[in-house]
Length: 333
Image 1 (spheres, rainbow, N blue to C red):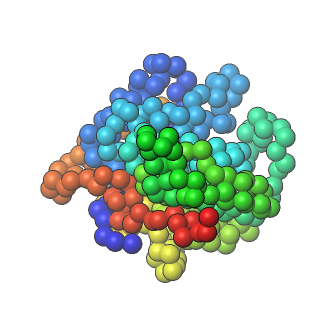
Image 2 (cartoon, rainbow, N blue to C red):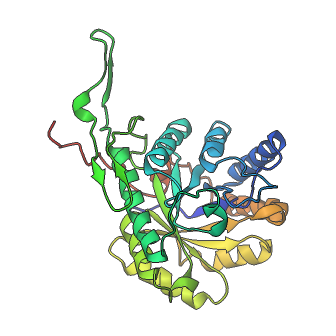
Image 3 (cartoon, rainbow, N blue to C red):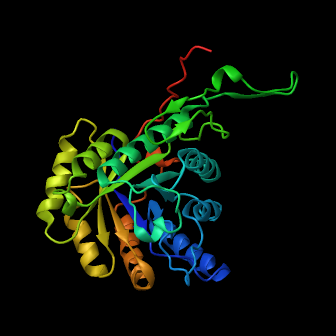
C-alpha cells in the first residue's frame, strides 16, 4: 500500500430517515457540513431492524446515490448485507454509485443475522456464525468478480458500425458456490475505481468466539480497510491492530470511536493517530447527531492545522490503493 493521508470517517448508521423529505434534507445538510469540515468518508447502514411502527426507511445505497449528486469529495460507503442481499444486486448498485460519485464508492460488509431482520426475510434459512462468515467471504468474491466482468474499454460506442460494446471484453463469471450461484456478467460496465472499496468491521470483544478466526481471515484476505472497535479496555484493540499489521495483506486500519462524548472521542482519536490509518466517528441516532457539529468543528481545525492538501480524485487514490486491472483482461475469448 502506498502512502496516504490520515482518514476521518463518519458513521451515520443510526439515522433512519423516518421523516420523509425532511429526513433526507436533514441528512443532506449534515453530510454537506461533514464534507466541508474535512470528513473523508461517510458510512451508512441499512435500517433493516426498524420496528413495524418506524417503517424500514430508505436503503443505504440508494440514499448515498442521492447524496453523491449533492457532494464532491466525500467517500460513500453503504452497508452491504452478505446474508440478506444478493451479490449481483449489490455489485450493480455499488458500480452505479461509483459512476454517480465519480469514483467515491465502496461497501461496509455486514455479515450479521438477527431475529428482527429474519422476520422480513422468512424464506432465508438461519446460519450458524461460522457459516455466515464463510457466506460473507463468498459474497465478496462474487461481488468483486462481477466488478471485473467488464474489462476496461469494453464500451467502444462505434457510431460508424453501430457497435456499442466489444463482447470479447465482457465475461461470464460462472460462479457456483455453497451459498450463491451467479453467471454474470454485470449489467453495469466496470466501475471508475475498477474495484470500489471493501471494508470490514472487527470487534475485539469477539476474539473468543468461534467465528473470530474466519472473520479475521476474511478481513485480511478480502478487505481494503479494517475498522476496529475502540471501546473499553484498549489492550484488546491493540492486539487486533497488531495482528492486522503483521498480516501479509496489511490492510488500512481505522479505529471506530463513539462521538457521544465529543471531547473524549477527539482525545482518543488523537491518541490513536500513530497506531491507525484513520478514525471512524460514530454519530448514532438523535443524540449522536446533536453533538456532531462539535465533532466536525474540531475535525475542521485539525484539517486546517495540517495545511492545505488537495484531495485525491477517487477513494482508492485517497487510501493509497492502485487501480487494479480486470482479472479477465488476459482471458481467452
